[in-house]
Image (cartoon, rainbow, N blue to C red):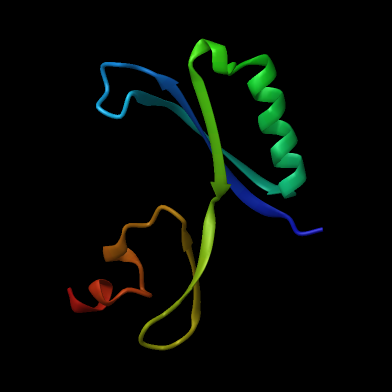
Length: 95
């Protein structure tokens, strides 16, 4: 089985925010399988962050692999890295 790192983001409905929800917290899970992570999210939705209380959970892989535009080497970066800091973008190399 393939073990990875995941980031879980917890949101709560809040009409004071422009998007209609605010981020309550983020949690990192390392060295877990995708199936385990799905079960963990299901358990959290049932016990702690219930949708009827206004919570919304989403998770995604923490890291992604991109190809360096200049050298062609593969680089591991955080999934939420801004484009200006991503070595696979022209913006990174033009600054």
